[in-house]
Image 1 (cartoon, rainbow, N blue to C red):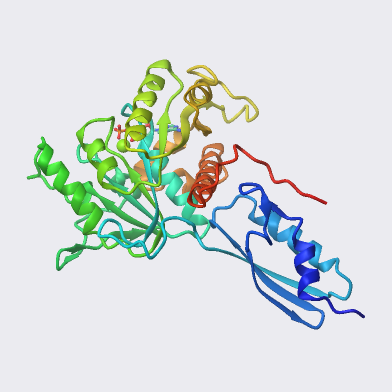
Image 2: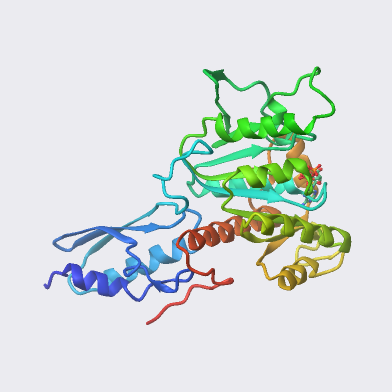
Length: 363
Ligand SMILES: Nc1ncnc2c1ncn2[C@@H]1O[C@H](COP(=O)(O)OP(=O)(O)OP(=O)(O)O)[C@@H](O)[C@H]1O
Ligand SMILES: [Mg+2]
């Protein structure tokens, strides 16, 4: 029986193409720790994000291809990830240790920005990524309600320690508000608070920090876009015309500070009655988010349906991705999270993103 060589194993894996980079996983250097012990072969495939939606396909294809080599009896593939982002050595006093900072914004209030932020965070965290959420909304912080976590975070020697719940690190203006807190925040106070959130919170090592942006394109939002090293922004909108106009304003704000807009999420797109699971009623009209995205030249990240369980879950501190993971809404958030993670990985490599590439196999 012939025993395979390292070159033969790599040749077997070479036809597996990463759809985002358009290159072989071998040439990209994703195959690591290759070990050949007689008829047993083991190796790691190190992805650029744990949220890679084609993880399972890579794993299966790799196993099948190597198992098909003559003289191979067993194949052990470990899927790992080293999230791309800012180089870990690029330390600064603003969010050190955070590889990707994602702003979730909207031009207008009440479109589901906070809902999107927390559910994307949970979806990314489920893949094994280290995730934090920062609720930078001074006027209407919603993270305490959305997660059921309350109370002042521990502070020591000018450092603030985020709360931890459901696998996420959490920081919110809401954790600090008391009955004595001002109802109206003056500009410099907001500025100061945001700076503290960026420099004094001990986030540790994070693959993704999701920032629930202050609403609109006002002072607080602007301050944050200028002070935080944002890797990219997501604009949440609903399908009706007015909120699409506002989405454009949001886009302009990020353009000004040269933060790439990763795409548009259309929330509350359609309704599927429980008794008609194949129907989609587009109450506010169909395709508005996608059209706006095309017009402005950004990606359309997905449609999230209206689901009363989103509201119920939020009120209980159990967002839909953890409460009803099988629901269409939860699955939409998981897909959007995968797209966002891939875009960020590609941006970090400096390569142009490939729109909605499906996995391609070269045989
Ligand atoms: N897909 C959905 N289906 C049903 N209800 C939803 C959905 N998305 C959001 N909601 C509900 O809509 C309301 C507004 O959502 P959310 O608080 O996330 O919006 P927001 O943009 O953060 O608002 P604000 O501008 O006040 O910060 C909440 O009650 C939320 O539970
Ligand atoms: Mg909100």
